[in-house]
Amino acid sequence: MPRFTPFPALRYSDRTIDDLIAPPYDVLSTDDLDELGARSRFNITHVDVPREEQGPSRYDDAATVLNQWIDAGVMQYDDTATFTIYRMRFIDSTGAERDIAGVLGGLEVVDQGAGGVLPHERVTPKASTDRLDLTRATQANLSPVWGLSLASGLTDLLAEPGEPISAVTVDGVEHVVERVSDPARVEAIAALIATDDVLIADGHHRYGISRTYRDEVRAANGDQASPADETLAFVNELVADQLSVEAIHRLYHDVTFEDLTTALDAAFERSDAGRPDADTLSAMDARAALCLVGPDGSAQWLTPRPGAFDGVRSLDGAWLEHALADLDHRVTYQHGVDHVVGAVTSGAAVGAVLIRPVSVAEIERTAREGALMPPKSTFFTPKLRTGLVIRSLV
Image (cartoon, rainbow, N blue to C red; front, side, top):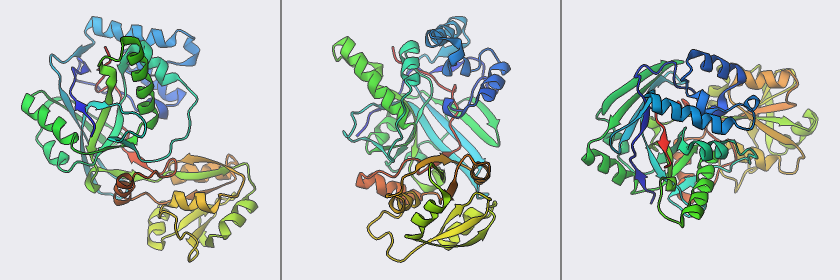
């Protein structure tokens, strides 16, 4: 089972963090970066998102900026090793009130296939070394991996508030940060998480980078223990009321729409669904159907034919992979019905299929069986903010 350890957290000294934190680096556009960077010269994007136009020294420059902030007292380390409770309160896409509570700490970096920390879906390859280069230069974990603990009782253990640090509301989500320094409570949290596996919900690529960096440090220091043996992670309990899971839909390219529908027809029955709107996803649940979006923006229900998916895991993404296995095509991924329809009608994609969110029960079953879902099967919301906590690797 994985270690989960406290550490002296590096935090902003100013508890008014509205202009200092940011969404994850991989969801930010150039315009987003311009807007966030203009809010404050201490916004975390000045360190976490080195931009290509800054040239080959951009990673070293980011490290220099971070060290300058520390020297100037803009950011300060906790006096002792701590955990950080991170709460996200919001109303989800179904209209239900949510209060997700997790903890930020150092999650053990394990070898691939070793167990303890498990992937939950196949990962699309990324050629970029951006995160590795940034980690090497800053010697810090800047943004957390999101892990789901299979250990029962973590939510209850985090119910009691810690020491208030900061709170901010962004896009309807209240992000609340509390410090836990009491040794007994720190030990209780670490011990509970270490009793069962942790499933990576988001940040597979970052976790893989942490493994590469750990191996580099071990090679350099004679395999001695170091902070690189763990990586910054937000861990919450894998239970339904502690997760908000949405779907990531499929966009199809490098194929004709006619060939796409012909391949789908072997496994699905098609029927008219009108034009996709806000009610389409709930209608898909009620019909137990997927939804095909054509070039003119109209939609058709895709109802599985009897026996078409015998022996295939009951996941929309897995069904589509099975149905299109013999079709030469390329697939990309998009969250949000409006964005999907826009991509198809603009010609950016030949067609698309809206899929349903994966259930929490199926996520746990997949983890327990050691299986992997297709890439981009789940979209966990809200996105964790970067800048609440930084973890030093020295």
